[in-house]
Length: 594
Image (cartoon, rainbow, N blue to C red):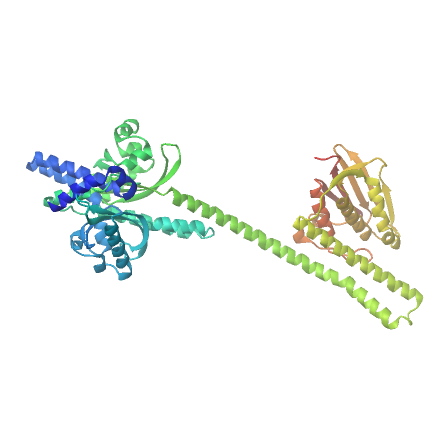
């Protein structure tokens, strides 16, 4: 009776609002169970008979099953931090199957000192200051003895005079949430860790469901235990449903009403009274049949929508309650919201796919650039070797070299210098396109003037091979583009035309207006190229060059730069070529700004 008086004192001291705000969501479900227990027991006292006693005992068994098998640690302690009541989850964590074996003992008798001392210090401070400790995250142990994160709330219990006489505590395993947070921070972690988290959560729910089958405490202790449980609130974030043996709904908690936006009567009227009628799982009939056959709990995941229409994922456990003849008398359904875990799983999967894609692209790009720079390094050495060789020869034997031979050497040095300069210029232009540092200033200007500048640059090389450079562009023809970029494009392609045209050949530069575009043609009657070579002309990973008709060398980088510049100017390059007959490069550019 002393404990009953203590519960009565607490009911006056703590208002419902204080319980809701300070004890937290986890305490509410047990309080509801306590209220139901007390109501049933008072009704039992009014109508005490063998038949009524049996019915009350059955109801007490169901409610006690819920309390003792909640996935939360619920307990009461006195001023010396000794247990005076605890649920089965607490006793199993302590290594005891029977919660009664905890009574009169402290945490030091079950935990290592590194845990027990912290728990004890918190409780003594709470009782000394008379202030609650709300949702403290601390280390604890799970049923297997492993270390977990626990969210703990402890409330001081006071008598009528305001003196603290003990504490109420509830702890919730928040390890899955902590693990989910770590998963989101490690974005590139594999999906395997999330699956492990889901499996651990599933094992906990499975174990909770199996524990619901244990036998209830003796009827003589119902009053004391139910009055203590009345301090615990009537709610939890989980959805809890009690059904009869056929799956008809008998009772739901407030979590159910919050999720579906209606009380039990309205819900069953709109959706049907049986789980087979209103479950979002299309295989619910098969699941129930399996439970009836095996008489064991079953856990599954399903997707549905809440009352606002939002998509939610739930992990559902259905546990059978058996009578003394091993027949199913009731079913208990517990839904846990795992939407956050599913979203984390989806995000990690997408991130892994994107990371793998970027890694493959980076690997390909690096390999391509390595190959490109290897080619450039090789081709850049050749003209410098020629320059150094001839200059060394001139320095050591300048007085012995005849005038004709000296002129030949100087021409070779000039040719090698121009070759190296052109390669470096193309390399710099390409590098600027990759870093997006090339200034883009499009304008409308006459094309004939630009082509004339380019022909003057190529005349010496063309005359050495007796190649005719022909220009066929009207005086008034204009083009819209970046002048410097277009100069580079036409110069590179025309220079290649001279390079691959033999003695006494011809290179023609012409242009005409076609619809909304200006079409520029650079045609030669040189050695031409096969279609397979045309298909790789503008690919960085296929960059290479064929020696010219006079042994001229290069890397093919000039065409890559030309392709990038044409794209920048919203233009295009088409190639028509026949081996042995020559090639034609066709450039298309818009007349005006797009």
